[in-house]
Length: 188
Figure 1 (tube, rainbow, N blue to C red):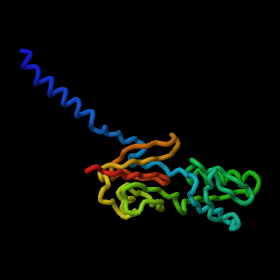
Figure 2 (cartoon, helix red, strand yellow):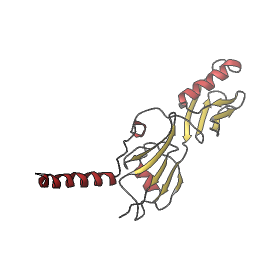
Figure 3 (tube, rainbow, N blue to C red):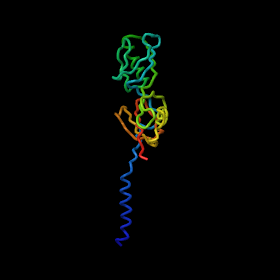
Figure 4 (cartoon, helix red, strand yellow):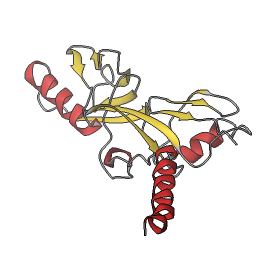
């Protein structure tokens, strides 16, 4: 009877040992899924702010490292974490407070902050972000995979309201401005 259990135990131990060698699949965080959430501004974004009827205030502004833009008359306005519509409302409120009776302000993103791609791609580096971009299209922009690249999953680092998150994602994952992609090296 003991001899008949020995092969079963050996198979169980082998399966257990092999499962320990496997890389666990990291869950794709909801932050990496394609969602229709509004775009949030951060350092490096270039904005076109139009104050109708006020050519001296209408201009292109860049969100600085502190997360603010600086405009004539009203000075610094915090932009980090706001949508372009929320920033337009904040500028409107500041202008209405002391300077203009009924200001009408529009804000739109002129240039998004760049994304970064590292690792096993032909030309790693910093590239301009384009809306609805996926990891796969980012690899194409960087010249494609090297022969040793791991092509089925990539490491994606994203900084947002919840802090910095890192996950292993498939090539069809949507990017956001400021993301960093690392293409790993495969062993075989």
